[in-house]
Image (cartoon, rainbow, N blue to C red; front, side, top):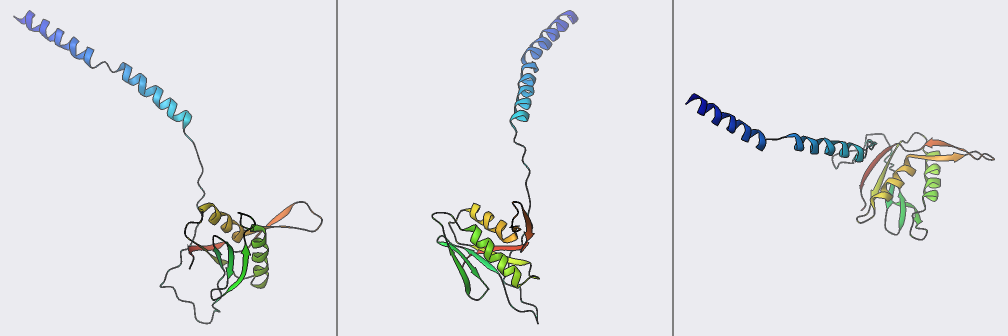
Length: 166
């Protein structure tokens, strides 16, 4: 009787081992991991600190209430001072005139050299890529010296706030 039980136990162990053969599954996972590592896209993400304007903020006493606002509209760009529109830059064909915007921003920086903040406002349904391009132009510009082929990067307004256009 003991032999019979042993034989039944051996048969039961063999059946379980045949059912739980994990080798093919481990092979598939090994190939899958190698495939995922090879096809993975390794990207670097640049994070830029932005400040979003709040309704609770108030201007400090004694400081002039001057704000640089670049409004991205479907028809073109507008530069405002917080109260009124100072300049309008229409589109060239279907692209924004970023060179003209850079010239205007350098002129404003020449008038207000201590000012470091600006606001970029965007109309709904304008592509996100245009926001990034405008922010890059507002943050810095490449200035070429007369007679030179290479330019130097000049910081204009590094502290950028973003929001919706009125």
